[in-house]
Amino acid sequence: MLRGHAYEPKSGGPAVCGIAITRLDYFAFLLASSLRSAYSMLKEVILEKILDDADRRILRELQRDSSRTVTEIADAVGLSHAPCWRRIQRLRSDGYILREAAIVDRSKLGWDMEFFVYLKFSMHDRGNIKEFRQRIIEHDRVIGAYILLGNFDLMLHVVARGIRDYEQFYLEHLSGQPQLGDINTMTVMATIKQAQVPV
Image (cartoon, rainbow, N blue to C red; front, side):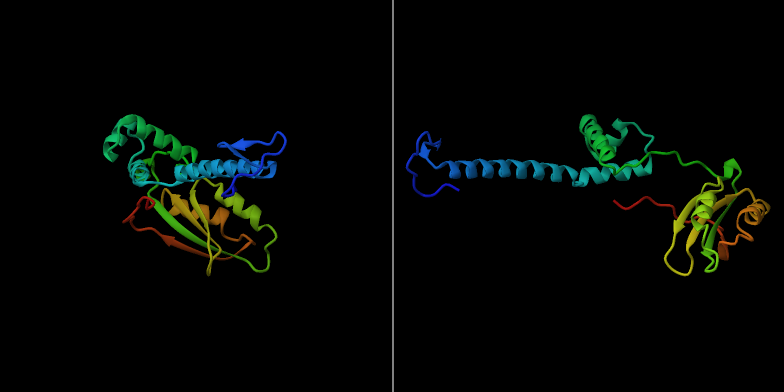
């Protein structure tokens, strides 16, 4: 913005670093300074949003067991209490941590069976699909629901106390529904992996 030579001062014209400049160059100088300041601030914000290795260690530990105290998490990731607490708060406010919940033992609560139910919507009666979908996912036995791309449109993760319990759920909520063209139920024999999201 500033040329290699000094401008002749005009009546009451400003000066920067002892160099007389025109008002146009002065405003350009102020604009450039403002842009540099804005860029620096934006850079700091972006850097704050980037996860570093310590953040990733914290997220892994919280996924393993979020019931531990901040001090225990800090010890596990190699940080002191205060920096670890600040990072956890930032991860929450930035939306990396959506919520924290307890994982219960389903079998101890009497839910001894799990099913994955694949649903394909009818091509002839699609008028109330949204209403049916909302109604079925609000059922307490449906613990997961996923919209699919492929041969089926929706997959439900269903728990039941036994095969008769699931049969009742099937007959009352799935069988004979005009919105459904095909239903395919898969019974879970055993869970061999239930891992955390890679970080």
